[in-house]
Length: 307
Ligand code: R5P
Image 1: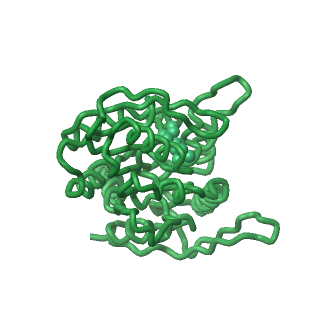
Image 2: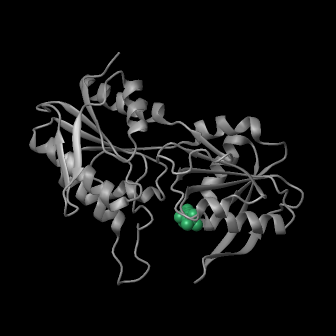
Image 3: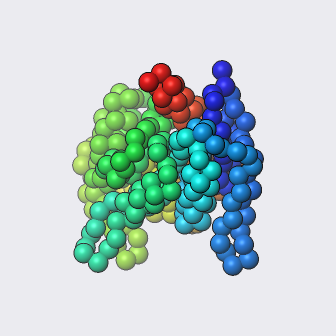
């Protein structure tokens, strides 16, 4: 049954918004979003939101600042239009990697974004596979922090050979690798990564990969440097050159495709949290997650009305 909500989409990923709306049994409501000549964002909602539950769908994917400002403008229009509540579905949360200071001269942008979203009236956040879970603590508002692990594992199962190992490309992803390993019934190997001026370098492999097929995991692929370097290191250590890669968020900033289109990598699985810039690449598998977001939105709205 259709929910009593109004759902708007920003311009970052309209196909995902359509899929969420379809699962919820509602249309994507009209709104005009444009850019003034000087680069400022202009937004006009296509209908009255007074007293309504509003859902805004917008990953803050590249160009991150533009997509973030679009979302802020949409939310502010809804708040000033006296919406009852505003749920932001932010499938990919930009700036999540800025969750702490590495030295005292840096900002914490993940927190700045959380403050901005709440300032414009966002009262509920739905997001997926945050880079670090502490981002949730930046919000006073309720957060549904979802994971794509189940649909990704389901999609990959048929392709994964026997006896594969799950590989984390750095220590920060060891916990994520353990969750994949538990979901798929496999062992974990952890690489240790060091950032250099030229990019990244893998300095240590903890675990045995010789003669084994590998599933290389990450939360996101940006320029592909981490995954390409990890794949190279694994094959140098004797892993089979048919590596399957999986990450929730495929940003694929150039030269990601050139880097990942190496013979050692057999396929790359991502979800549709970000509209892919690599359509048509034969190694890419995009797993839809609209239904996961729709389920969380439906549960939230139904709980509100029950309470
Ligand atoms: C880092 O901590 C993240 O989990 C990813 O490994 C990283 O952001 C990927 O970036 P790139 O694809 O540019 O190496």
